[in-house]
Amino acid sequence: MPIDPYILLLLGTVGLAALFPARGTGADVASGGSTAAIAFLFFLYGARLSTREAVEGLKHWRLHGTVLACTFVVFPLLGLAARGLEPVFLTHNLYTGLLFLTLVPSTIQSSIAFTSIARGNVPAAICAGSFSSLAGIVITPLLAASLLGNSGGGFSAHALIKIVLQLLVPFVAGQVLRPWIGGFVTRHKKVLGYVDRGSILLVVYTAFSEGMVQGIWHQVSPVRLAGLLVVEAALLAVMLTLTWYGAKALRFNRGDRIAIQFAGSKKSLASGLPMASVLFGAHASLAVLPLMLFHQMQLMVCAVIARRRAHDPEAAETPTTPVPPVAESRIAVGTGRRSG
Image 1 (cartoon, rainbow, N blue to C red):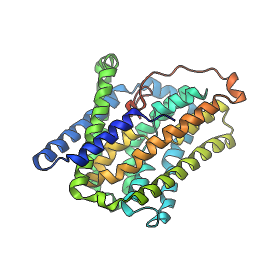
Image 2 (tube, rainbow, N blue to C red):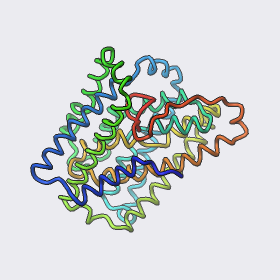
Image 3 (cartoon, rainbow, N blue to C red):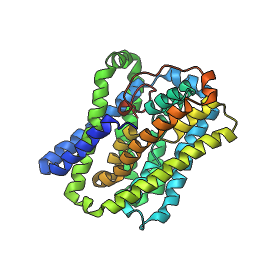
Image 4 (cartoon, helix red, strand yellow):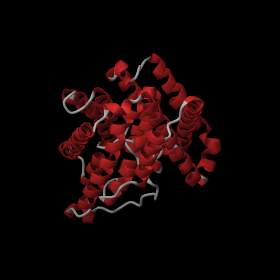
């Protein structure tokens, strides 16, 4: 079960923030840089989204509706049900982070990769992940406003405005300019992939620096972290089971069931981290911790499931579709070929 190398970079960034947190003027510079990086990140997401691919994907509306329901209805309901675990298993801040985890959109690239390995419907996985990421720009903040309230570090109408200005407006600008810059973005996708990852690392460093300065890490003990891992393992197991057998009950074929399971059971680190930074501010470090742990857990578990699905008797009858060789950590909103 592989460990995503990008997770190691993220953990290294957390360690750097713990040892050398940004303070004073340095904190202001890091915060400003993080804000600009997030806006540029979503601008690139918009520039990458192929309108033609999105329109084509709408033809399989039943599958995409199922994935969206899993991502933005079933997941949040399970998150709300987990409130009963507070404060025995989870502190209030860890529960808030867990609930936020259930609100973020699905991944793209890992859904594609695992669907391909398992010999599922890869084009459906591409479109489902892309639609989920695109919808999440609007749905995630609205759900956060409804379900988190003031527990999200002072979440308010002002936070919604920040989301619109920092995430949605740059994304729309990227879409508008795509006819002129789309070719450039495609030709330089490798370099811009480093921009993706670097931007997220800056967001993580800023968030965890603020957490260190605020002293919030004294609120988390090893026992609490262990409890969080147990809860997240149960959450992932429930979603993997529901997506597989629920899709079977809805009479989807094998290829579609695989796409639904992998796209409907996972959450995007690349989309969730920038959103958490905007929504939670100084409290973002604890808010994103459950998401970072869940991200690695889902990669490890789904890698095993995908390999086993590939050896199903039905798999021999299902042709595979090549997957673009792009790292999971570069998956992002608006494309089936990038970050998640």
